[in-house]
Image (tube, rainbow, N blue to C red; front, side):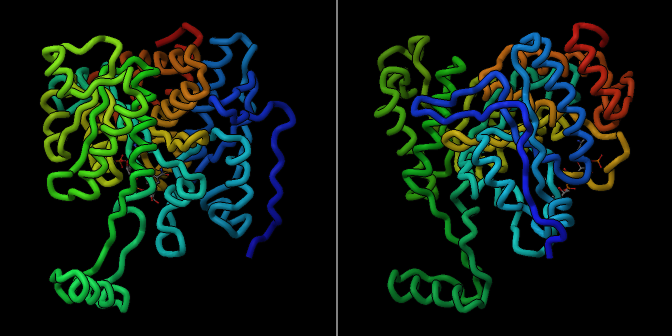
Length: 420
Ligand code: NAP
């Protein structure tokens, strides 16, 4: 039972981000809900805020600030209010549009498959966006990590993640098997578990639309549709077909298919066109390892994207520096990719870079590019100077190992143009 009644009060200063027909209206002092998370969450979030605030301050000299609005979720919310993801928290993010979060512990058992999945579903954050680029000095298992610079758009609401599945032997599974056999003349072993993979035109098109828009706005040369359509024709294959359709019907004057680029321009398309191409998922894994420089934006279904984004992150140094955004039509929640690593909680030991880079993504989403660049450059500078936390130090000969707060101090110094 909740031990306290939950009433959330927004900060006294600051203004709401507004959703207009043509995009977001960002005030100079947006109120941004903040979930500090569990385990190592509070410590990485706390130092990330110092770095984000310093970047905003030096970029805009006080003209812009963020009014952080702490909202509860996760273990602390469960303990205090009897709910892991209180409705008041969801309502705050709905109202204030853009949020930053730390990692949350997913309780084993219980009603939630994952708090993050629940958050994505409640706010319809259908695009999981993961930029993957190398920071000079980062230890990497590949010879040329500097060639990797892709942004992965992974669909986040459909596919085998829709949660439509039944256990072997359950009444539902048996019934499905019966229908498949009797009505569709297909044979499925009686001792099968059954899962459903829905991929819709709506879900696919809105994801690819977002990826193409991103490519146009950020002057990226190509969007690659990654799919397994050779095997799953009406789900993965349809995703590919719908992707080309969006490109042609909605961005016809700004995009060109690779086939047309070859046919009409001998493989050298005009510079103002984003090339739309497609690659089968298994091939994409080797392409990213062998010729990463040929890929800039990837748009893909949920399961492909899950595998691909972790594999790509490993190429540039792993989870310690990977950040992502869960983005809907307007709402967005930014977070590090790593989890709450409970065994390190409170030790001032872990790497806060991923949380800081989630902040970079958030600043970019607000359109505050000057601050985003300052923060990203400062993290780069500190890592290049080999001032790093234990996770990187153990792979970097000659590194100076520091704790979470000292790493953050070095980043803040670098933002101010000193140190590192
Ligand atoms: P994890 O928390 O990511 O930790 C796994 C390992 O990754 C750690 O033991 C540590 O490796 C390394 N690591 C993670 N974050 C690090 C950081 N900031 N700096 C340095 N090293 C870091 O994964 P997990 O142990 O599988 O999951 C723990 C909990 O987090 C679970 O409840 C899980 O469901 C949840 N989770 C949440 C999110 C999210 O909120 N988005 C994402 C993933 C998992 P070493 O021990 O080798 O140093």
